[in-house]
Image 1 (cartoon, rainbow, N blue to C red):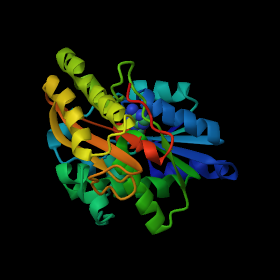
Image 2: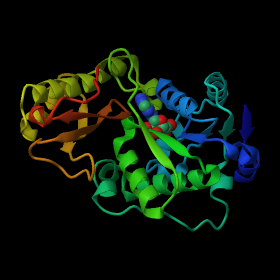
Image 3: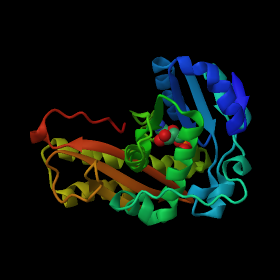
Length: 292
Ligand code: AMP
């Protein structure tokens, strides 16, 4: 496994690999099973697998959150090696944003203004779009792998790649969960023991909502209410809990096809996000993933 720290070294290392297929998994490190699922998907489809680890400062709206973000490079490299990664790109902030850096990519409209964009500010997705574009240009992969856990990020990246004509296939990998259903996240390690126990209200809420939907309920207010009850039972504070169109993220009043249920909550000090898709029973067989 090669570890490189500059785009120039990355390009030189990947030169000979371009005869085959290159799969790319961008991350902020603190690797867990969710990231490993992405790496496994990339490993299965490609000749060369590239992992990037970069805690991108421009997508954090909160300096304390950036400072507290877990950094576990040594264990990340061991896990990457075990997962069969060929090249790890570990850029410094200076090599990604050299002095004089002045370009930003903005994906406009509701897909960046709602949900995470509304809570974290439009700059959050400017930071995401710009760093993902830079990473895709540095790696020039055939395919890049993203987690369904960050559903809005996937929509934004797909929009940007289509709009800029970046020749890469975006592959979406289902959310990896802990045994009790909590979505795996680098932030989970920061939950206290008590808060970790309360956090299970999140998958419980999503599962309750799905069950009600499967029983034929299509009214979004009633679907949201059943999830809100589960979250309130464990004193989990809701930032947003919405049922939206999975394509353009506009809020739905009634579910009449496939819908994305997305939420952000605070459990103690820690902010968690999660989502599932639901399908109106009349629309056809459920193709949704389970939250438990
Ligand atoms: P992050 O390091 O949190 O920026 O995540 C890097 C990539 O891993 C993103 O595409 C995430 O959506 C994905 N990811 C994070 N957690 C999970 C999870 N539990 N299941 C699947 N993918 C995930």
